Amino acid sequence: MDNTGANPQGIVVPPVEGVAGGGTAYGWNDGGGVHLSNSSPRGSIDPSEINLLAARNERESVQIALRPKATWGGSGSAGVVQVQCSDLTSTSGDRLVVGQSITLRRVVSILGVPDALVPLDLPISQINLAPGETTALWVSIDVPSAQPQGQYEGEFFITAIKAEAESPSQRLGKADRHQLYLELRNCLDIMEPVEGKPLDEVVERAKSVNTSLRRVLLSPVFSEFSTDNGPVDMMDEDAISNLSVRVKLNLTVWDFILPATPSLPAVFGISDTVIEDRFGVEHGSDEWYEALDQHFKWLLHYRISPYFCRWGGNMRVLTYTCPWPADHPKSDEYFSDPRLAAYAVPYSQAVPGAAKDYLQKEIDILRTKSHWKKAYFYLWDEPLNLEQYDMVRNMASKIHTYAPDARVLTTYYCGPSDAPLGPTPFEAFVKVPKFLRPHTQIYCTSEWVLGDREDLAKEIISELQPENGEEWWTYVCLGPSDPHPNWHIGMRGTQHRAVFWRVWKEGATGFLYWGANCYEKATVPSAEISFRRGLPPGDGVLYYPGEVFSSSHQPVASVRLERILSGLQDFEYLQLYTSRYGRGEGLALLEKTGMYQGPERYTLEHTPIDVMRGEIFNTCRS
Image (cartoon, rainbow, N blue to C red):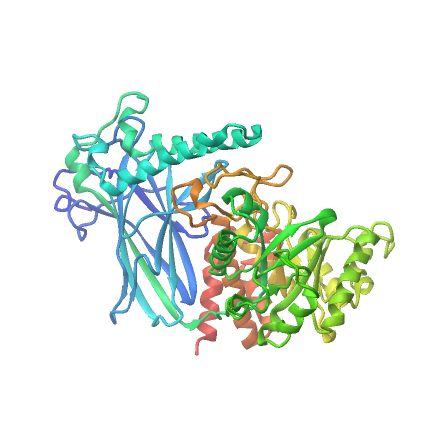
């Protein structure tokens, strides 16, 4: 191809390489060259075109990976690129607006694995690239429920910024200088009141200051003072200023809507004590209510039904979805939200008080509400012996005295160890419903117990009495381990997403996850994240405090949380297909596409997922 007209200087190497990859992060294709096109603007490079498919009320994501092929910045830095994106527009003039429907986040490594999604400014951001390293951008598009169907197009322009003669500090605007000032002042605020504090708290504060100072020193402001790692390969300045990577983004919006209320209740725990410790809020204070409210509303965007939890002795757990009592206006606001599929009612007050007959009064109020059908009681996590099982029975009996139709949820992976219910561990496990009946209505079992034996799920379900309102839910915690679906850091993209493929195929009607923010204790918001000892990396942590990465107070999602959302959306597609053609046809579709056949046999690529979704759209559209 003759590129002379498009590039009279004959330059064939762009400042950055931009390759589009699936939002599920199955990896990016680093092969092949990037070529200039005669139809492109002068110096523009079009490496690829991204094509996405989405229903209304669905989020689709894609990654753009950047790797510098030359150096044009100061020592220790390959250079700075500017990322600019446009609205997505259709031929009829409808728009998906940048900053509203379109968000951009930078993928940051945790334990050396890309996992944290740190928000970037829109419509224009600047990013510092490191020599020889790949930087990934995570682009998400949220399609509103009322968005007109059609083909939408937009573009990302990624341009290397030419080094200026003046220092980076001279180019800083007032807002940037103020941000730098706040970062440094925060370090002083953390360290000044340490006199007389316990040693472990002083160490925690020192770690936080270290993290903040490192973030400041690694910013572009101080790049010119970084240690010189050798000669800098500077590109021709004209090439830097004239070349940019252009990524076209095409989105097809389908003419059906994913339901606002999830078909699968996916209830995820949020530790209130972790929030209290890290953010320094007193239990029951105004700041405490505000912090819990923020976390609750934020997680709702992920088709998750959050509950707050506080752990007691021997795995007894206090769970509640709303920190306010049932007669508070916030209670109806929380429980009537259509995005909430299920809510936990506390057995005792979330905030201690002098209320008498609290449980009965709460139940009496909630039973008059239309949302009572969403309610459940989660009293004990994984009872192990006869004493603990009896505690569940006693608490459930009290609840059912006030509300015979109340649903009690019990998680378990074994029967009582001191009163075997069967000759083998699995036979004893299967007999738990008979042992707990009528004190439990939702039997929530570990996927780890099943191993790769999907047929065992049928045995569990056969023991239940759905005519009496009994349900089977599942959960993952610690196990199962690789290659089975779970949410540990370092697992593959489809391995994360396949958790809900498994739930759908095995026939569970709900799902529970024990904790979304259960990292090690810290006493300052910006403290470095440490996963709990004894747990697989990432287990119990699906999002991070925003303060760890910037001055933002908004939670930062993990890549794994985004894949959870994708899996829950896949679940809705399969539900739609089954509602039209029956469960047998849905199972056949999974088999035919090769998307998911079992806990050790599922796709590692994105194509079978799009084939499944496309087949469902083509057969189910009105």
